[in-house]
Image (cartoon, helix red, strand yellow):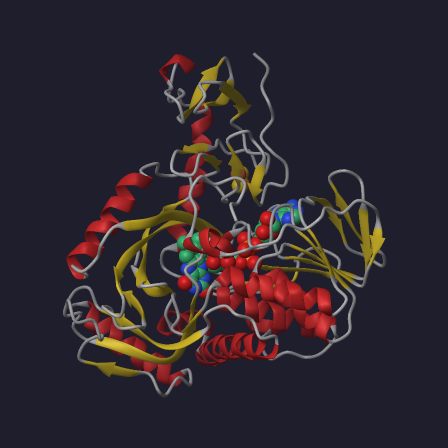
Length: 507
Ligand SMILES: Cc1cc2nc3c(=O)[nH]c(=O)nc-3n(C[C@H](O)[C@H](O)[C@H](O)COP(=O)(O)OP(=O)(O)OC[C@H]3O[C@@H](n4cnc5c(N)ncnc54)[C@H](O)[C@@H]3O)c2cc1C
Ligand code: FES
């Protein structure tokens, strides 16, 4: 499988056998229309279909062609944004519900894998969070106490993580974490949805989403899905202009997959306390293991040095795992960081009450996406769910995580790009595969020279709220630094909140 917009290929894309889906060719009616065939959309479709609801899933690419195909698929209740922070911002009960929901999500995935006999290398493992500097040991102590208060009483402090080739120093051990092959899992979910009578369509872009007594989803070439409820599981909502996008920030994160001798690294999940942090796991291949190492995050559209970041990941890995052989995979993807550390799952704010969203996953979209499936199924089935308020997209919090204020200021700064000069004066400055912003009169133009030497010119103004996009040479995409919209080199929208492409500019 190759996704159609980004230039790199993840280990999952290289090794999964994802069938293509036919496009929606005529208007249809269903009970629930789900937009997005990633883990959030397909889990919701699966759970609703299991309860006998008729579901339709639309995706404008392949199954898992979004971030679920680019994840590293640690399934974990060790919390990225830390229980100690969740407790400070949301209170002790919220931290307990957070731990409960992520634990339930891992269990739900395990249950689905068994029930549907999905061959996706699902494996229970321990997870280890280790300190990168002596000062961080205090952070581990605080997190251990907070995890215990949140109900994860089996988490314990150990002298080091079980990596023979380097001494991590003190670490927290989280039992009953897990990992899987995310695309094989999605393929299994999609098969199960179809067996339950659901319908899935690919290459079908949802252009307009309307709730109300007769909800409607319009698609590019005209067919309309009419339904009782709509779930927008597009990773970041394409049907919400402002409310959610000021409450989360997009980050690009980088991953390498390196060949290591079989069984030369203890099978477990690993994270360090860096900011950005490194995340590590293994994947079995015939005759060797692939050690998967991620990190080097930066705000989307605000750096264009992916090759250097891959180089730093490689150096970090080589220093700690000297048995490492060649680099087999290099890829990147985007995560949405919520301001207050919790995902947004539930009714779309300021919308009809039968339009639902799931977003703000942080680095925990496998569990957040599964929580979305469970929570949205309960909301649609009019059942109470203990996590409804915790994840409510309309929640008002008086506090945010410490980095959020600076992130918002950072977005405001991106609008000044309108008045600055372009990066280049003429397209002749661009080599094959390069892109840059050029000023033409009062307009900012996104100019790209493809590998065959042809020049493509697009408006550099993001159709979401008008920031100026930046070239991402690693993925050959135009990325918006404000709220994370991403576009192919030809201007096609690849990821929201924008739902239309960059306009073509005539010479
Ligand atoms: C490098 C990396 C490592 C990560 N590691 C982890 C990890 O170890 N553990 C973890 O839990 N999480 C991790 N994450 C986060 C996790 O992968 C994501 O949060 C999760 O995959 C998001 O799933 P989703 O279903 O919400 O979105 P996606 O998988 O992005 O699916 C959204 C789908 O919507 C479709 N779509 C968008 N707009 C439209 C439209 N208008 N019409 C039709 N279809 C549309 C897209 O084509 C896409 O297929 C990682 C992410 C990255 C990038
Ligand atoms: S994503 Fe909001 S302005 Fe581009």
